Amino acid sequence: MTNEYYKYDEIRQHFIDFIVDQDSEWVEANKEDIHHHAFNTDYYIIGTYQAKQWCGDHVFEIIEIIKDYEESNFGEVLTIISDPEKVVNMYTYIVGEQVVYEYFDELECVS
Image 1: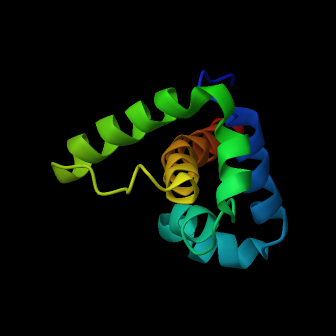
Image 2 (image 1 turned 45 degrees about the vertical axis):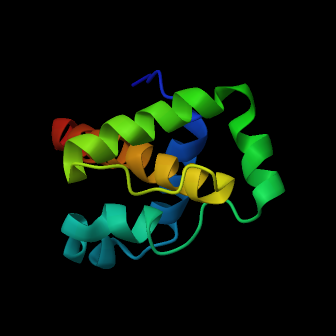
């Protein structure tokens, strides 16, 4: 499934690589927390320079997605948007939710 998120395919590939590295029994036992394990236990991008490069010209679009997500889910923006590393990692966490949902949705369609 195609998605309009910036760098969606790259983030999806990160998740697929994560799944491939896991034991199938572990994946089954951790279905409910797999998003957390794939996108919240380690940084996606480390370093301010790397994070700025990764965002490129899409930084304001990325920040807007973070703001909408956090205001909707937490009632306020919690990510320090002046920290490029935190911005990238929160953005990949958000897009990662969609990636994980679609992954398990596709599995159900195949079953």
